Image 1 (tube, rainbow, N blue to C red):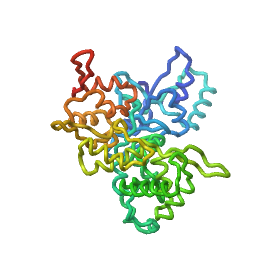
Image 2 (image 1 turned 180 degrees about the vertical axis):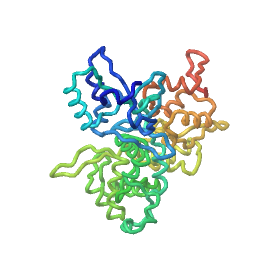
Image 3 (image 1 turned 180 degrees about the horizontal axis):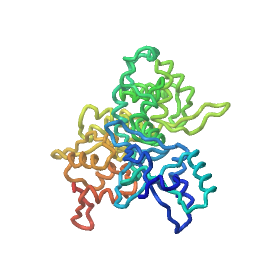
Image 4 (image 1 turned 60 degrees about the vertical axis):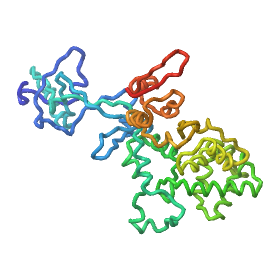
Length: 398
């Protein structure tokens, strides 16, 4: 490299406006060094607007590998080294560039503009789209579930201790490595509800009380399960002592809106047969495994007469096993399994060494790895055997 004093210094603008096939001299910048705080990031063209408009954010705790999030997607960052010499030239100081331009205009000598190199770049960061890391969300929200005996929380603002284990939206985006859109989807999947500014899971026994009261009033008031008036339901549950926010939450968890609110009438809701039936099945199996026949009898007795619980509704909720001549059923919920394929399959194969496809499918259907198909996931983590073309395949650990 030629000494900087012999040339007119220039910045990145010098390289930006170079003609094709031309060359430029380089020199050490006065602040040349390792500059570990400067990292080159390689971007897909579609992500450039998000960066330029500051719609991307880094998320992760000090003990986690950071991820970069847009509004809807999450990207892992991977350092890729290069064997080529990549030189980083910073923008020139404006006053320095002006002085150099004036000098060059007034001097017809053969002096050349020099690009000042501030750092030799050993590589760059690449972005790889990944699934949101939402397993931590359930752990955080499970620290302090909302229970029947909980106070109204009016004193939360003055009582720091009572806020232990509670997380606001800002707390969650600081702790969960997911985009805003993915985080909202995760909260919805967990049936979380915002209460007094904090996102909470409601204790299942408490939700059972609320749903039970709703169904009793359906009978007493001769309401249709397919056309529940939101105002009537919420007012009824409030009069029975349940908080307004949980009365509305009950409809969102167990129902579907069939008519939106307008100026004259309230929203109408329909209770979802699958959600209600699964709720009562879970309550029954809290006590441990049951004989299939006994379980089905109690399940039918607990669900409303208008609903028809069938065993196929329990996909991804239970496992069956033969003990002698009896078939037993026990809880094994896909929603409680890790979302990362490696951890998911590890638990599945600890549970059973071999899985028939019909039993395995409900427990891997929700796995999502960007860039990898469902077949690719199976190929990577399982070994498939099929004794004959007419038999269903069996999967074991790879």
